[in-house]
Length: 158
Image (tube, rainbow, N blue to C red; front, side, top):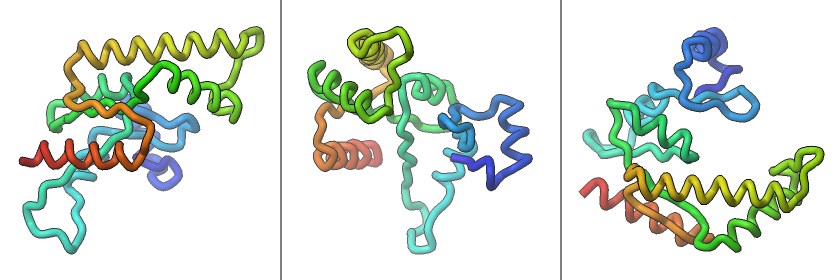
């Protein structure tokens, strides 16, 4: 991610040119293809030459679609989600309670919840049918998910 406060004019030029695949909610950070490629190329001093590297991008379906269009990167899609509609609803309710999901004026919690679940089901359908996700991780245990993600990465470098 490129920081607008650190990059200044370069950030603004890239933003005008539409070079960012995604911007954060605040508009301060932008993700570009170059930033992904540069992250792969950057290595630490302790790494042996030729070490295979990967960049993990936490992407929603829209960003995954954009990444799948990029020709100079090897994309390995990993779908990470909860394993039941009930858990999806439970998480959405918690996000509404914390204010992470805002209930617009004139709408109810139930209508926002239904819309949220509908969009998630639509995203899951795209994920299954598109073929851009090579691995699926379905659970809500972060440690188990991390182990599965590491296994997927190791498989890709075999």
